[in-house]
Length: 158
Image (tube, rainbow, N blue to C red; front, side, top):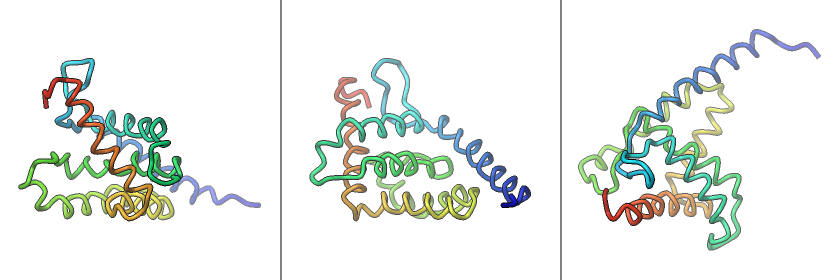
């Protein structure tokens, strides 16, 4: 079998471009404070913590869930914050155009990937946003739980 090196190189180039772009997630600050440091967490830290929380607390889902699918979903869903920013839960003004900002961000960011991965990542992001599957509802519940847990253990700091 002959390998099309041009196609493989183009694919890898797109994947590397995406990986470099998502490094910006580390610069998006949230309103949640870290438990053991005097600073806000960034979105990359939140995503990592959320993925581990899904692994650890999966036994508490109301129905059996595909934990690997939940982990993929929670690692993908906040990538749009690179362009759209983090909209605080109680920011009613920011909520007005949040969906539009995030959709545009998804178009740009996932569009950096090869078509098959763009389709997969967009589907994971859309599933999380729709909250129509047991996995997306579980992921969403955890996404709301972690900031509350942090806020409680920082004596309501945020």
